[in-house]
Length: 284
Image (cartoon, rainbow, N blue to C red; front, side, top):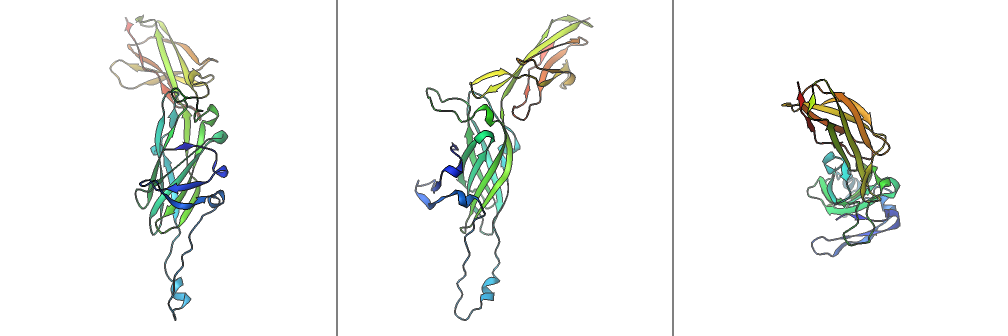
């Protein structure tokens, strides 16, 4: 399970065997180790009379981390009521194969998570993270996230190989950790005479990770969309900015039966949201 802890510069981590619970790597990983690519020196024992050139001809290669993919390439969107779990897959290569990965997630304003896992293949290592923005039931423990942590996060990976080498890859990947959003819609009057005007209202709110509630999202551009009856396609009719409290309001002409909705495409800190369509019966 992932842990939300102080940044690695203030701590050390010992690796533990997941089957037995016993420590399998007694030297703690230090900050200095993360500051550079660390590799075990390969030593070749040469028999008497053998030349040093013969040893140097043994082919070797350095381990490589090619990248990291978070949540299968999707944003991680967190509300205020439940934990959100997602995978991080680190890929790379080495002659002996990858064996173990230690992964750190770093975000704005000191956001930090870490976890580790054995690699499932010689070229791929998947770890699991769990984040939340709500207090545990009946607990006074601090939550993991605050509003300031929303935005772009980076992935650092320290990967061990089967023959004892290691490679550290800072910034192996990036992802967006966002606050969840919600939208409502109401189109009235209904039914309405063809050619008359209807008023469409709504409200855009987003998760406040500091107060554990949803609050209005001000000054955001939201699309008003319409889908005719017996159609599956929404078309944008207008764009409206939310008020200081997140409310939306505009008027449009009623032309045909169909569904009205608001559509917010998201921002750098907040996920997208679509309201369920509100049906309006337009009569001749």
